[in-house]
Length: 179
Image 1 (cartoon, rainbow, N blue to C red):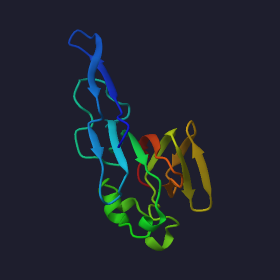
Image 2 (image 1 turned 90 degrees about the horizontal axis):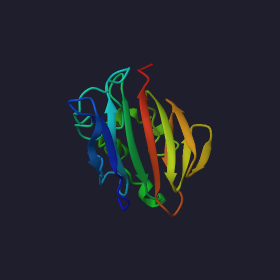
Image 3 (image 1 turned 135 degrees about the vertical axis):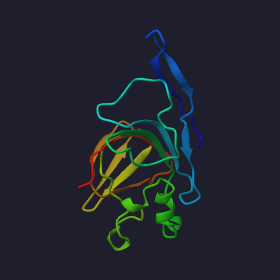
């Protein structure tokens, strides 16, 4: 990961006055040999609806997980390096998604238009921060650039960076329950 991302989290002191409680890199950064060049960062989670703003404890206090907690949210950034078609042919997709605690979200091999095709039981607000990327769906693809947003509603999809520069996405994933 070349670019460093900063996370500033606010809270209240013992007198109810607003203050910064965390200022620095995200608490969880996942880089795995199962998906070389990808960087996944966990910034914050909520664990209930409505969210609870009481206390000043770290909300992301576990290893990286693609999915939010039940009845919660997950906010993170993922850096997608340019895809190498030869490397893509040899990937261990289960290991790659297993590192994100989400191997069960992959579609069966025979249904995968792209090795990383998956679906999550979430509503996701995804924003392209930098670079370009293609959103691959079962029936079509959409090319996205910095400034574009996707509302991903639990459909089967994959992300593919076919460009020459890394692409950074920020996402807020909201638990939508299991169908």
